[in-house]
Amino acid sequence: MKDLELRNKIKIQRAIKNITQDELAAQIGVTRKTINTIENGKYVPSTILAIKMAQYFEIKVEELFELVEKMNSDH
Amino acid sequence: MEISQIEQLDNSRYKLIKWLTVGWAAWFGTFIMKDLVNDRLIFVQILIGFVGLVGFLFFIINLQKYLRLASKIKYSRLNDALNNELHQIYKYKSFRWGFIVNVGIIGAFYITSLFYQISAKLVCEITLYLGVLSFLVSGLIYNKD
Image 1: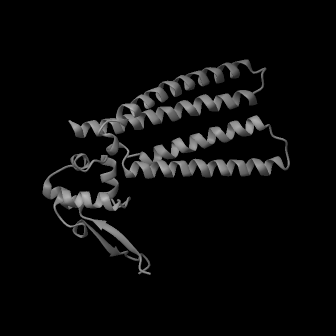
Image 2: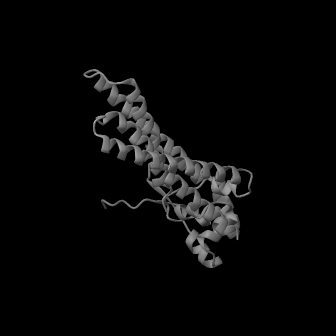
Image 3: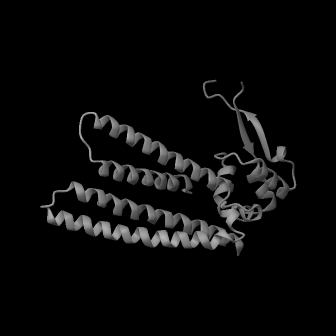
């Protein structure tokens, strides 16, 4: 089975909308820590939260989050 | 306005848990230590008693503040934001650490009891102390910015 990782474009979308993590957190109804951990890939959000974020940025969930193959360090 | 309110409440909660942990560590730690130190070492007994009292006050004051903050936000619209899914996961992980530590301590005491006689009171105190402490400390580590 392939090793997959979830990447996101939250930072880019935030830059487009010109909002801070704090402002996004308030819009979505979570804390800034939650946005920060998702943005840095430390935490994989629930489907509900992912949809909420995509709706806020007015894009599809697949555009905000994508599954990519993990880069192998031994190659 | 709302942005800073969520952030402020989150920071307040973190600080309260931090001082709650310090209070618990000092109060209950010295409570256990008191039984282990020789009664004739009066200065050490007084010092332990003082640290324990300060720790107890810290613990009680911050516990009361924490409960007041929790009840204040319970019916607020900010409750969902503050207790969001990441917070729930961190809480679950912290409980897991508390459980693992407790099982480890009980296991260690069990092995020790095969060779030495240990007071049941001391076993309960140390298990309670380290179980709660590991839960609080891991919660602080997970929630650290």
